[in-house]
Amino acid sequence: MTATALQQPADFQRDLLAWYHANRRQLPWREEPSLYRTVVSEFMLQQTQIKTALPYFHRWMEALPDFAALAAADEATVLKLWEGLGYYSRARNLQRLARAYVALPEPPTTPDAWRALPGIGPYTSAAITSIALGYPAACVDGNVVRILARLTADGTSYRDSATAAKAYTPLAESVLNRDEPGDHNQAMMELGATVCHRRSPLCTICPVRKHCAACAAGAPEEFPKLEPKKIERIAITRAWCERDGALLLHRASAKSRRLANLHELPDASTLGLPTAAVVAAPVLAVKKRGITRYAITETIVRLDAPATVDANAELVWVPRDQLDDVTLSGPHRKWITALLANT
Image (cartoon, rainbow, N blue to C red; front, side, top):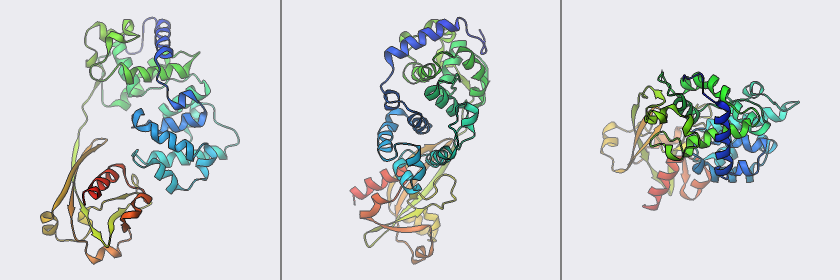
């Protein structure tokens, strides 16, 4: 068995769909399906777990129920609804997509046509068209790569998930149930999320266990073979400055690639204070987080802001009682809320 072939694909399709129809999770975009709800859910689920996305999805649908409403909304509203989900380029691309969509003379119906819209790549175009439109296109993400690599016990080493996804696309297309492509793709994603885990896969209850070469060999966790990520460590000192009941925040430029118009605690190095003063400042908290290949440590220190900060257009004083009105990056919202509760 190789990475480009699967024995008895029809039996595999049948076993997979029977399990999915009996065990699928009840999710709002599945229970009340529509093209728009599929598009929003797919954007939200990029880099985000379902349990995290669910409350955002409900709130989003109440505020922006269709393409036209999203296209007409101001960006501040869109970003505020997205606050905490991270990777804010997704929200901006989603709005750009809505504006392009409502301007089209006819709705796009194929993966190629959808890929011409903002924020749409091969996976998202296949997901949208198969789930919402019944188009026979296979989705290939990390979950699907893991399943296919284990089914075939493919020993090929891949540089990263994107490279593996491209390599496994022909196999994914060959096992796709072309009569029910949307359910098939969702079943593959569901299997990867709930059974075929990266660590400690639940092989004993897997509905396609009999088709799995890696399970038969007793070594499912050895697949897929991906080269380890190179982690870059970054340390940032953040300034906590208060004046007359207001907190100093940095508002990213509208041209910022990742955090345009979002607020965070300012990098202490941007305040123009002597290094010695920053080093000696009282530490309020040390926070760690990961973004793609970066491991970031952020140390929050209490500082007195120099008068020169008032001349910096990207540094703004926000009264405590107005912090809920501005859009903060998710981690900084949590950190600021916790620190304010203790001060």
